[in-house]
Length: 50
Image (cartoon, one colour):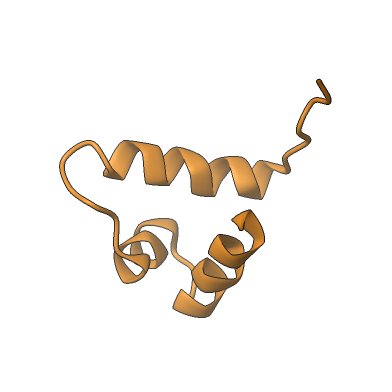
């Protein structure tokens, strides 16, 4: 099986989602606030996962 390559930025998003999701579902606006990025950046990242 091929190894999936991730960038440091992708790892930051994934780690934040993981940590935030322990108590409740993660909203894109909350993720953006947590990471200090715009909501559009979160939407673009989420779209890249699909």
